[in-house]
Image 1 (cartoon, rainbow, N blue to C red):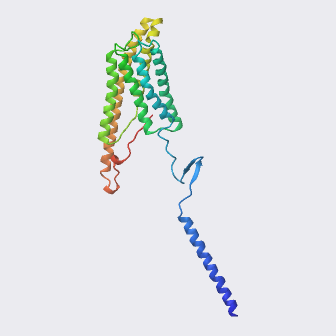
Image 2: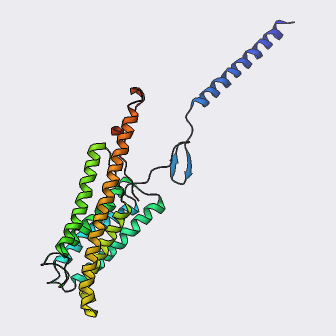
Image 3: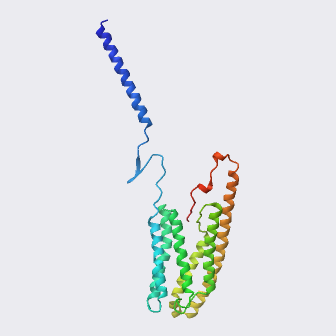
Length: 277
């Protein structure tokens, strides 16, 4: 066999070996690269296997809650100026109706859109408490009220006392467990609804009195007792919820003491849990 034939076969074998080596290198490089970004929704890019993008903090439900909180100022101004402005009470009733309606809308939107956020869980009850506390305080004052109709002072004490108890309990739970938990109970929701209905009835009492004066006065009395009773029930429900949460956290800490130190999870270093119903 000639030298040229043997040299040609060697050259072909060498090229084949180089080609196989190049293919192995390229395949190993391709397998080591991270997965390409894919998009399941238009305008949103996520890595394969990643979870859905969390909702934005300032979404539409939270904007509605923020707008309701901002309407408290004009509402208070109208209540205080009922005497110089004869139309102020009806204007305050209109703003109050808008705020009460928005309280239902923002929660419904948050659940349907899956947009429940930490900010919304705090902003929504905050707007409710500011509105209710300022309303009952102003409507129980002799210089404000709603025409000749006012709330009894003991109702104001019951409403404000309930909210202060809940706030103090939340702070105590946070100090003990190092976790923030905002979770309204069914009794708390009913209590807030009763307070809003009572405030709305007192605002409309002068108009109701034109049809039946006894209905206006007795309606305020019955509503006041109902709100006071609901406030006591709400205090009991929130107290039981707080004690149960502290007890559950204590059991978790006791169970974690049996786990080796390298595998323990520290509840205090975890993100605070905020739930909103």
